[in-house]
Structure formats: structure tokens, C-alpha cells
Image 1: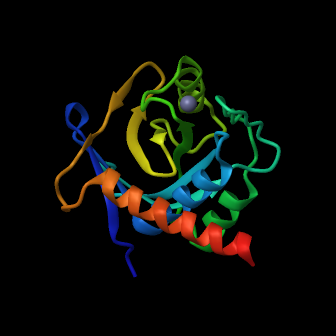
Image 2 (image 1 turned 45 degrees about the horizontal axis):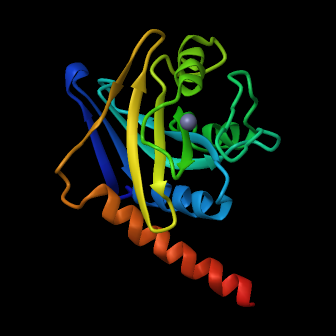
Image 3 (image 1 turned 45 degrees about the vertical axis):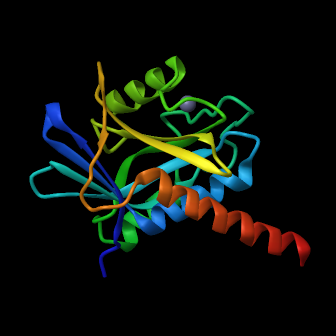
Length: 193
Ligand SMILES: [Zn+2]
């Protein structure tokens, strides 16, 4: 069954689209809220359309253990091994692949830092990584109450900023806020137990 899309970003200059599935967004918001006040992040996995114009993110994975994270930085080395991604690839018979990276900027802006740009450009040209055009998904602002999301498409030299698409209807921030609220609720219950 196909996951319903929570967010769609268009890259007009490149005639490309990124779709983010609801369960992937839910997992991202859960990991993002749980990691507060620190940054966290990981890998985006999914599939490309036959014409390579649409990337559909179906899964968001946590970073492999050992990826260093701090309050304002999160680093994923380009040669990092990711056993969870490898498992997904095998189990889907090669359908689900590496698509890019996601990470949080708690209380921060929705723009890639200089380090982010360097990391993603590094990933784009790395022979170890299965995409020449990795996507970066950033979650910033007030992550627990009013998170914002932004999507960027990289190549070895440049990056483009995705425009949230109005179709399917529903605002990106609203969906993320509702998910963040639900995650806070779940975490609260967990703490009480
Ligand atoms: Zn960053």
C-alpha cells in the first residue's frame, strides 16, 4: 500500500519533486522531539520515479550509532555505514534506496549551514553514496510546538530550495505541529508510566 504524502516540494528550475510520506514525517517528528534540546538526524530512504523526476521519501532512519550530535551541530560522515538502510534495500529487493539526509535545527533557521552544504556536496560526489543528488530535509524553529520544514536538493556544486506545493492540500507546518503535539503527549504518557 502506498503511503499518503504529508508534504510535497517542487524544484521548479529542475522540474523535480520530493514527496514525503506521512509515516516518515511521523518518525522524524518523534525523533526530533525526543532529542530536544539537541540536534538529531539520519537518513532518508525511498524510491525514485522511472523518469527520475520524483523522489518519494518513504522511510526516515535514525543516524547509525556513534554519529556525533550536539546542541547546534549534527555530523554524518559521508563514508558512514548504515546497516538499517542496507536491510531496507535488501528487503525491498532494491526498491528502497538512499535518498538523502534529515536533521534538526532546534530553535534555528530553515537554511543549511555552511557545514551542511559541505557535507551534502561531499555526499553528492562520494562514490560510496547511491545518489548524486541527495536531498536535505531540515526541521527547525520551535520543534516541540511549531516546527518548520524545508527541503533542499543538492548536487556537487549547488543546491536548490524546494517550494512547498499546495497539492495535495494541507500546510506542511500544520501537519508537523499536530504530529509534534501527539509525540509530546506520547512521551508524557511514557514518562508517567
Ligand atoms: Zn544543519
